[in-house]
Every structure is written in C-alpha cells, then in structure tokens.
Length: 326
Image 1 (cartoon, one colour):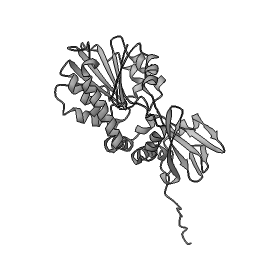
Image 2 (cartoon, rainbow, N blue to C red):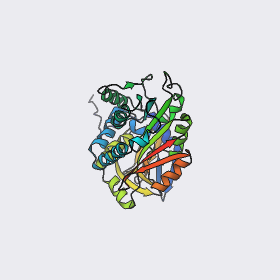
Image 3 (cartoon, rainbow, N blue to C red):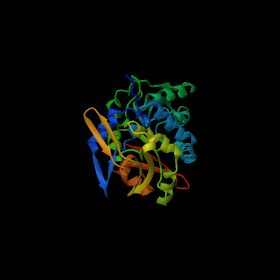
Image 4 (cartoon, rainbow, N blue to C red):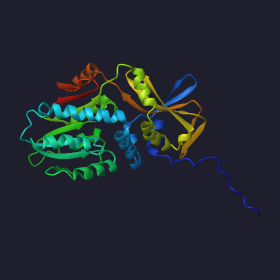
C-alpha cells in the first residue's frame, strides 16, 4: 500500500500557554465595528520564559529612547540622592527592588546608599532568569548583603505577603524601588494599593517613571516603529499558539494610554482542551497598555495613596522620580 504523506501547508503552531489562554477566555472581547478586540494586557505575561526576559533586556539595552530614560533616571537619583535618603543615614535599611530586571538600576542606587547606611539588598522579580542576572551582577559589588528568600521569584504585587518577615536583625526600614517605568505598565491603582498595604510607618517608596510627551502622535510613532518592543510582545502572542506571520503589530493612543496590539491578517482558530477561540481577519489582541502621566496627573494619582509625596523632575520634563512615604 502506498504511504500517504502528511502535507504541512505552514509552520507548526507554537505550544499554547494555558495561563494566557485562560485569561483570554475569562476576559472575553469587545467589538469595534465588526471586529472583535481581545485584551490580555498584563505585564506579567512578558516574563513567563527566559526568552521573554532576554527580549526585555534587549529592549532596555539597545533601544535609544529606553537608554535615554534610564540615564535620566540615574541622573535624577544621583543629583537628588541626599533628599532621597534624608533621615535614613546610619541606619539598617532593606532596599527592596520591585521588578528588579537585571539589577543594574538597583545597583546604581545601592552603590550610593551603602556609603551612607548599612544596606541589605533584596531583588524581587517574577522571572527566574532576571533574578539570576541580578544575583550575578550584584556578586561583583562588595560590602552589600543580598537578602535571599526561597528564590526571590515573586510577583511584586504580592510583596505584602513577605514585607514584615524580612524586617529582622535590626533592619527595620524597607526602602522600596519601583524604577524603570514599572508603574506605567501596570494597573496603577491595584499596584499602589498593594504596595502601600505592604509598607509600614517609616518605609519609603521611590518610583521612576517617564512623563507623557505633549504630542500624542510622536508617542504613537515611537511605539509603532519599535522593532524591539515588537520582538518582546509577539512572544506573548506566540504563547497563544499563533505564529507571528499571522499578525501585524500596531500601537494606538486611547485616553491616557498607549495600547500595543496585534491585528490578524487571516482567520485563525486556537484550542486548548475542549475550549477553542476563533479569530477572524481584522480581529485584534491588545497585549500591553502603557499609561501616560503628566506631572500633575501623577501627583494626583500618588496622593490617593500617600500623604507625603515629593517629585523630582528632569529639566526637560522627560522623566520624574516620586518619593512616597507612609
């Protein structure tokens, strides 16, 4: 009998990540005209694999604007450092780096702080690869203890579960870092509520965030043509079993936010277990939402959660540090 050859008309679909698939099902879709719009925006989905972590670090290290923002942040920390640690000199301090990434931002802060106080560093990240990168980078820094939990792999909105337990051996103050724009890529109200809940009197939160560009079109243009962002976010799409050749990346401005999404070029059905989702050409999946705040809007947001807020703004109004105390 002649053997029947299996014909594969295209690339094999990537394996489906059940976590993202379940979120897609749970959230459902809205309609824009005849097209469905699915929203799975959640920055946690950027970091589920080491490949995603590497793509994120590639964005931070190679994109011109991201490097500019990082430099602005470090310049603001350096020029305002005495104000950022006022009242905390010569004390035992836990520096908690929420969403630490490769740890280099936290390291720049700790290098200055360790000369003023007895500092213990605790990196927190949802991705194991990031924690390993941070531990490796900090191994080169002398005279700083690393606070190691079971594995330091924690979603930073869950930090409140451990915030009290790390105040030991005389380290009674937590100085929390939320640097690199982590605020704008999160549900700010959920995040700030959880962080404030985790803080005790005397604790400090330092936020580093970009300020909204006055020209929305220029913001959209930047996001629309950024191959590094596309390379990062498409990995979330691929974890829904969708080949990147089937979709087109796009960014758009809505209200106070940039939405980064993928548009289907052709029909596609994905399934996991007994459940399936059908996409039609023109349907969209929003992968990321980046909220944009001007100085006044940011202050208004932070004042909802903290009575004591001080802003340090770069001379060109591009970047801001927010010092929040409970």
